[in-house]
Amino acid sequence: MKETVQKLVKVERELSLEKGAFTLFALVLREDTPDFWDLLVAAPWIEVNKEDAIKYIATKVKKALTPQELMMLSRIVVIEQDNPFLEALHQAAQVEHGLMEVQHSIFFGLPIEHAYIIASQRTEKATQAASN
Image (cartoon, helix red, strand yellow):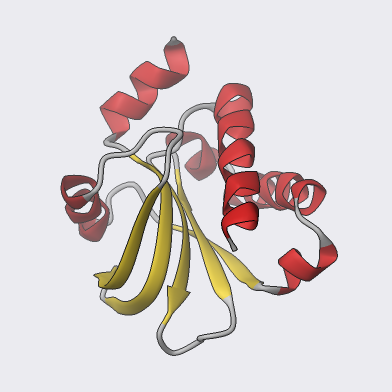
């Protein structure tokens, strides 16, 4: 799994350079779906056109991962910038182009078995990172 996560770290960096920084980019394994991972994403640029953004992210992920790795992904979930749980996550984890591993936690009201947080930063910090 670590190799897959490292590939997604590279995808996050590439997307951040192309489109703008993420306020959240995380791979999570929910307790109720133990065999499939969700990719949680949030960024101001995603909300401009969610459908196109999801397609673009999916294309980048498909290019980076092997077919076997792709089979482990359930879906890409867009988290709205005004979701109060997003701020709570930022307070617990502040990561930019990095990696924080979390086990047995609650994300957005759901029990999480395992998570890899690649980016978690407030909107203003994401905007600053995108302009640098």
